Length: 266
Image: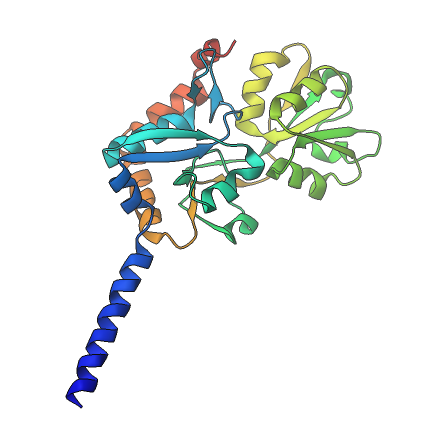
């Protein structure tokens, strides 16, 4: 009986040790490495974009810098194509996605999200030639209109779900979609409000009309590998802190209420 008891204790210790190893998540890896690796696609202004010097800048970049400082580690930005950003997170090419990603139930099946840090929605950039006819997304639901969005985004999903009768074209980048509306090759570009607002200021004056009332509800959140609840807990506490100490508001004003950053990309 004594031997059996000792065996049980040994087995429990082994299980406990194994569980501890299995539960070691991104926070421990980041601390050991001394570097926070953030995955993002730098084409979604004002969240992440590339300036004239080739540097990645944006709202998410400034938040990532503050996050790395709170961890007392260095920051590494990993530029990643959007269609491969979730697989790259899952294969540990970086620790977290901070790239204006909408929290959807479908994505949540394969990755976990921290609490949303901002809520946006889809809006519409239309060519000026159809401005008299199109007042909302409902008016675009007609085969005579050609509507575009970016491949693999919630803009594409919203277009297919809510504007099914229109002819649909997808593009690899946001810039392509906006340019095609400017050139009159498509009638409308469906995409996130912050990007469309910035694109309109940057290149739409006199050529486009921005229907800026969002017609979807989309919370954006940071994504981590499935089951890493220690990291999610840290991120939620970090978000709560920066939203209440003035840090978040300062960064928000810089990227959403001031257009000085546009000079860096023109």
